[in-house]
Length: 271
Ligand SMILES: [Ca+2]
Ligand SMILES: [Ca+2]
Ligand SMILES: [Ca+2]
Image (tube, rainbow, N blue to C red; front, side):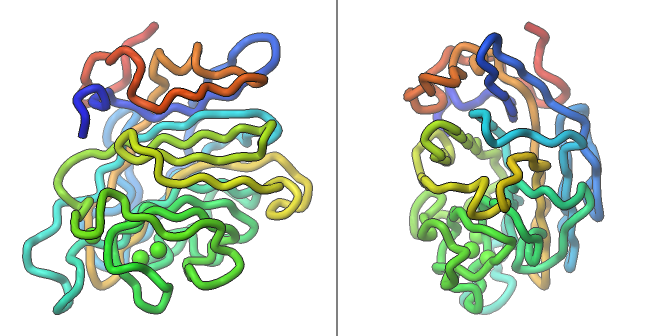
């Protein structure tokens, strides 16, 4: 990944009209997930039939814009596929929003979010499940209502290659996920390794959440017969504060800000 992506970060920053408010609320840790450092969580170990999630204890208001950034580790795939002509690692990580509880999640190809409705989900899918309409490469997609099937009305975007049609993202490296929600235009944009991958515009609050803007946010992950160790790291980069403006969302792509010191573990430095 580009060197200036090598900061250690997930942020969730909520814009308010008077002053920027930044916070990382405590997380509820579920299933196979464990906290491995102050801001890093292992969602699944490299074992079969695992499911792990972390959910914010506090809800956010989707009437407010936010930017979220995570460093994702999706595993270190063995050259020998799990199944013949298939991928080795599985199943990926989902960044999701849902109003139900802080304890949801299931194992397998649904990447921990399957069946959780209502929800708004961004999958970083590392395994091609034929039954879900997955392309044969690692991909990103936005969908609603915990529906892993890319061929239903819950699929809000197409599946886009995470890197390209041949590159595995279970590559023993960390990858930057950056997600922006512009409440004014009701647009969600998703960057992976600093490149724009997905954009979705829609009345999320009414069409998905029945008019309630308050949702928990978190990460889910799972393994099935094929496995990966899957981790997420969380922080609030210093660059976030000037980038967040409720009436004039930042247009710059991620990773164009001054590089913050690379951290390999533990919390980010204090401002
Ligand atoms: Ca893969
Ligand atoms: Ca899949
Ligand atoms: Ca998929």
